[in-house]
Amino acid sequence: MTSFISAGHHLKDPGAIGIDSRQENKETIAFRALVICELHKHGITVINDHDSETLGQYLARIKPGNASVVLEFHFDAASATATGTTALVSDNANKMSLDFAHELVTTTAQTLGIKNRGVWTESQSHRRRLGIMRKDGCVALLEICFITNESDMAKYDLKREELAIKIAQIIAKYDNMIE
Image (cartoon, one colour):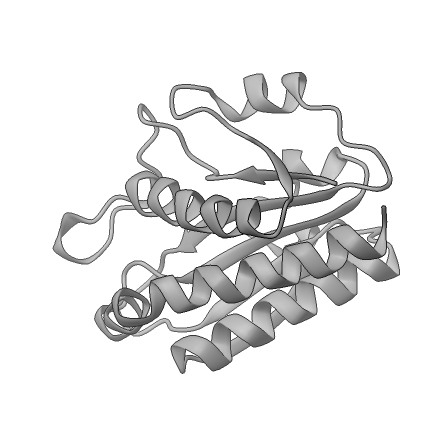
């Protein structure tokens, strides 16, 4: 049972800058640590990105198979009024990846009390193509909430530990389904 968990940005790549100058990389690195701690309680082996490692280096290093769960965390950014959570999958995602992404985004929206923006394919994203989507297994990218929205981030701050527990439970569920 091995899951591959990524913070999406490393220490030299801040990602989006949000309210109160909050940096996406610091937020995702901290959230990744919470989720990994919970996964270890479920007996899940985790391979994660290193804080100094670029996405390209991480993707070159990891070798997930069809029986792997692969998840990357991000925070979305837009205007201060944009709100909600979104999960992304590859354009040719398998049913398990779609179900995994749907469960992630639904749980995140319910836990934080924010809008569920649904599951999008990578070509619907502003980047159009996402490196993590080239990996085998049950693969998704979760935009937790908008780092640029004061209300989203306040709700995240209040519920981040609860969310990490629930996300870890979902990962463990899918990890056990595909072993």
